[in-house]
Structure formats: C-alpha cells, structure tokens
Amino acid sequence: MVPEANAKISVLDRGFLYGDGVYEAVRVYEGKIFRVEQHWKRLDHSLKGIGLRIPWSHQDLTRACVATLKANRLKEAMIRVTISRGAGELGYDPGTCRHPTFTVIALPIRTDLQERWRQGVKVSIVKIRRNSTRSLSPAIKHTNALNGILAKIESLKVRAFEGVFLNLDGYVAEGTISNIFIVKNGTVKTPALDCGILDGVTRHAVLEVARGSGRKILETYLKIQDVLKADEIFLTSTTMEVMPVVKVDRTVIGGGRPGPVTRSLHIAFRSLLFKELKLHG
Ligand code: PMP
Image 1 (tube, rainbow, N blue to C red):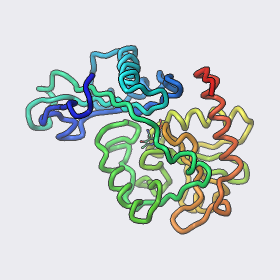
Image 2 (image 1 turned 135 degrees about the horizontal axis):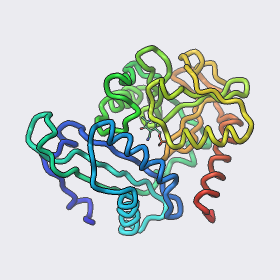
Image 3 (image 1 turned 120 degrees about the horizontal axis):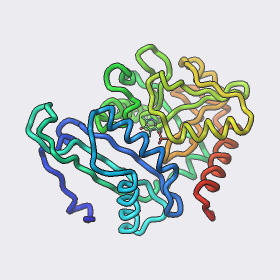
Image 4 (image 1 turned 180 degrees about the horizontal axis):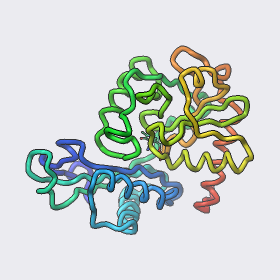
C-alpha cells in the first residue's frame, strides 16, 4: 500500500506501452462492493480474452479492494482494479513478461450525480464506430482505450455528457463508458450483446428489475431513428447507475425531462442494491 505519488510502474510495462491489460471498476456502498462476483467473472472473461493468467484468486482481489478502501478511509467509493501483462522486452511478443502488474485505486464518488440524475444529460452519437467484435471485442474490458477516448473527445466538442457509439453495421452499440437503453410505448429496449458491447453489470441488474416489474423488455437492434424517437432514454453504468438522457445531439427527448420509466427503474435498481448489500441508507 503506497500513496499515489509513490505508486510507480516500469516504463516497460505493457499496460503503458501497448494498452496490454484489463480492468474492472466496482462500486462500493457503505463499505460493500455491489455484485463483486459478477465483476470478477467479467474480469476472468477479459483475462481469457487477452490470454493472460494471473496468480490471484477472486478472494485476493476482493481483499486488495477492501484493504485499499480502508487505507483511504472510504465507505462510498469507486475502485479501479487494473491488471496489465507486466514488464518484458520491447515488442509485442508477450513471452518475456513474467509477472502481471496489479494495481488497485480507490476514489470517492463523483459529486455531480444527484444533479445530473435530476436534470438528465445530453449525449451525442459519435462518428467513430465501436470496435468490431471481430477485431478488439468490446466485451473485453481492456485498457486499450483509444476507441473510447476518441469518441469522448468528439462528444466533448458538442458538450455532451456521453458519446454513443454505433457499431460497424450502423446499429446503436453503447456509450464510451456506459450501456444505453430506450423506452418506447412502455417497452424497455437495449442493444443485444451481439451488437458488440460490454456486458454491463448495471445493464444486467436493470434488466432484472425491469423484468421483475412485469415490463416488456427487448434486447434487440436499435437504429439511430429508434433513439431519436424514443419516449425515454437512459444510460447505465457502475458509477452512473441509471442516468436519464434528455437530449441526443440536437433532438430533445421526453420534453427535456427525465421520464417516469427511467425514474422507476432507478428506484427499483436502488432497492435491489440496498437489499442485496443489506444497506442502512
Ligand atoms: N460499456 C462500456 C464501454 C463501459 O466502459 C462500461 C463501464 N464499465 C459499461 C458499458 C457499463 O458497465 P458496468 O455497468 O458494468 O459498469
């Protein structure tokens, strides 16, 4: 455990040189990690996807997170767990990397969430397309983030909170750091996993609560027009939970106010996590 200023990795680390690594971001409520096992399972999937084996068990990962939380005296937090292939010789051959690099960073929760949940956010459909599942699959949560960073730069130019990717076939995929949902005539729709997206832990939980509430749900293929003509739109992620979208580029959604289905799903998501983690509130 070291202070940030003393936390150093090698200039030969492949995470730094090539974005050759994977990560997870988990959310901590009252000192407890939401769906920690799902995050570690996705990490396993990512590790397998890049052909990296690590000597740490799920329990080791959780222990490292808890220790980092304690050292930072945090109860409400985001924890970023990053694992790179480690340092080796220059060049792409991973054969000389003996030890993966493992870092854990615990950070306080961003402070603008309440305000944004209340008002809703603007998103922008970016020109750059999501990586293909046949090149660098978005289902792998890897540290090779330029596809997302370029989309973020684009969306910031039009002052959007989040950029939304289309895939190479022109269907809506996901945000740069979130999954996207729309509501149309009461039906909740979200891009299917084979659109080339990350299998979001929050997406999963929201689909679960939406099903529980008896709503019609479709994991499907969405076009830009479906998004622009939606009654409601929201984003999901570990940090944002359920974030209402009130504008897509120049198109106002739902009269510019967060919609009732979005709100009720957010409430249902919160009660699910309160129950699961036995929170006191
Ligand atoms: N898609 C991408 C590209 C992301 O980076 C994230 C954030 N991890 C998500 C979706 C949402 O996933 P989760 O709900 O697990 O945070």
